[in-house]
Image (cartoon, rainbow, N blue to C red; front, side):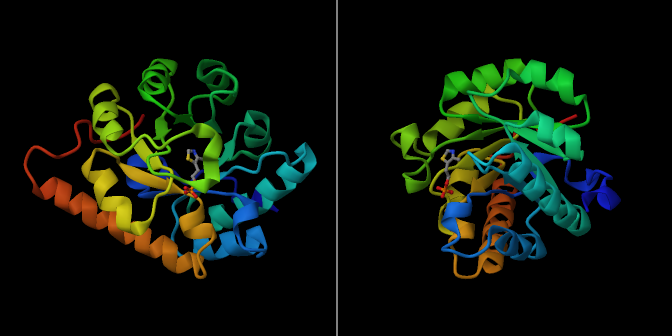
Length: 240
Ligand code: TZP
């Protein structure tokens, strides 16, 4: 039961500190049980997970989220629920992740209160501008690279968009879409605070190893960024 772990994990309240935001897709685990794979992901130190299981009915979604929340609470990581503010509130999850088809961020904020994290998916600079105006805590921008995980969102934006987004967005920005450990340096160098990924982790033969490799790549890219004058993050610090 999740209830015994219902105290939020404040050490991971700041998406700038995450490095990796793991997004779920039960169809990408190569037939392995999603909860089992996520157990490996969490054990490897993934700080933040977004439960994004489209088309589960409410009772299935609630049950899955409850199991995951028990795991993330125990491990000290955070769990955000895609779109379903009601499920997040019912379980006392750490946040909600919105899309362009979700309730408007300000409505969600008034429902969930000030302490829950609100993230939003953006697919271009106009989305980013709106997200900043909408009062969310962080944005996920992509697809940066080509990805079969999200063909409907069209051609990749390329990493240069992160540089432009950085100029207009004081919020944490996470790059998504075709992210691998080998691509982390490029997106972090272009201005991302971290990355979000599905297949690089869930489809990996060893998901825990994939998590560690991506986290190490973000840490290395970050170190490089702070070592080179003029490339430090423009707005470091808390999201609160
Ligand atoms: N939003 C933009 S691209 C994408 C989402 C959810 C899919 C990312 O999947 P992958 O496998 O990490 O490229």
